Image (tube, rainbow, N blue to C red; front, side, top):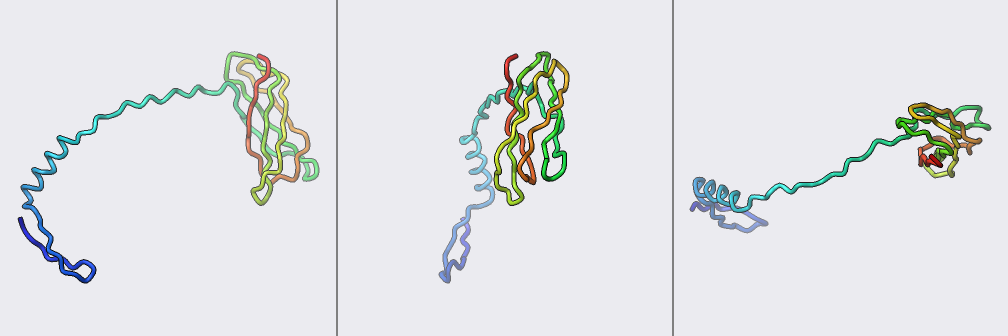
Length: 135
């Protein structure tokens, strides 16, 4: 063992150090006894959504702005009565409310256009949900 003098907080402290070969042997042994077995984590597969928002944007003059867009059906099923809901965000980041557009029908592997009613003077919108009706 070797000794080293160190100054800690204004006090002289003697620190003992093991010889390098002893340290290597000790850490090697420690690794063998503390081996952690890999835990198997099961991550559920997230299914792809049937309906996606293909595009959407504000349209119209400032006083009569709406959100217009396209809903895309990626599935082999037809949907009717689909509600696309948006949260409206003000210029200061505050939520102004929500607005919903209804898509009467979107066939399998097809797209359907939609348009909301007039929106409050929002600076941004965020897709809140796509709710499917009767299938």
